[in-house]
Length: 41
View 1 (cartoon, rainbow, N blue to C red):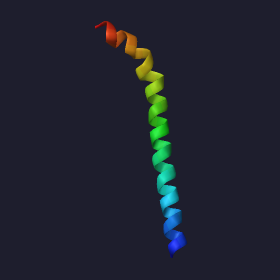
View 2 (spheres, helix red, strand yellow):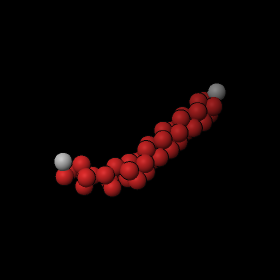
View 3 (cartoon, rainbow, N blue to C red):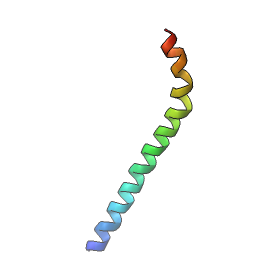
């Protein structure tokens, strides 16, 4: 029972970390190149 809960928490955290990392990758890909054009306006 306890180990089952721990496994669920591990999976939960890996999913969160994966989502956060993919979001930051997207931000780096699109937001950073756009920053200079945003600053100009």
